[in-house]
Image (cartoon, rainbow, N blue to C red; front, side, top):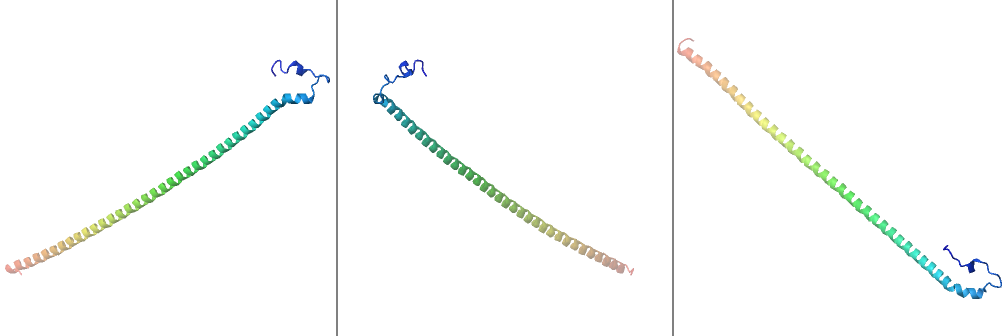
Amino acid sequence: LKPGWPPRSLQQPCRPETRPSMAVAQPIFDDVQAFLNAAAAEAEDLQRMVQTNADARHEELATLRRELEAQRQERIDGMTKLRSDFETLVHRKIDTLFDEVDAFKHMQDDELNNSMREVETVAEDLDSFRESLLDIQVSWKHLCARSLGLE
């Protein structure tokens, strides 16, 4: 309390003969009582307004959190789909590469087989040519021997 409050007249108990009657005391405090009631009502209104604002902010925060979580989930889903699409593309490219390598190997095998066949054909032709040359040599020897009368 402030020094000097309450006034001395209020600090000392009133004697019954000097005590004001209740009827007289009532109008003195009506303004104070009305002010206090108005202040209490205003405080309650302010408290309700603060609580309403706090509830609205909590609801707004909860809504923003839900939206943020939904956006985060959308990003996760998008990344998962992107990763899946990329893996599918890579697998397709790898399969295509393997198919091309197999086709190249078959082509090389075919070329090797063709080359081998050609070599075998040339070898057969050379064998045939050699046998023909041997036959010619034998025939030439017989001819020379007959011509010379050695036979």
